[in-house]
Length: 148
Image 1 (tube, rainbow, N blue to C red):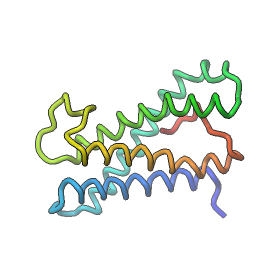
Image 2: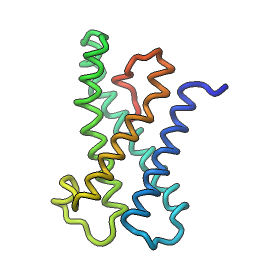
Image 3: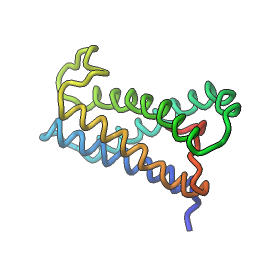
């Protein structure tokens, strides 16, 4: 049987590759080598999650350790920290996937409805992929972990 954190890492990687592939099919329907590109973008998104997550871990370690470990506090902290960071991460991925030039003002405001829904879907997938780790930890939301 696979260890919880190992399964978590693999689940994140697979989810990110699949979602990047979906983004390329949605925004660049005629792209060549879509699967290898999706694997590369999924790897980039995984690495981005590690870097952003580690920065959050370093910046919030003292704050989170001072909070009570109650579930509502963890849920609120998870929502106010990880969801906005994931918007930034998926916005960066959108800039890499969207065809043509993406104006700086559109980096965080989106280029339209499809783009906005794809980014929100990426956030949902990122949160959904946290479930194996939450289950491994006995239902505790791991706020302050080093992976986003």
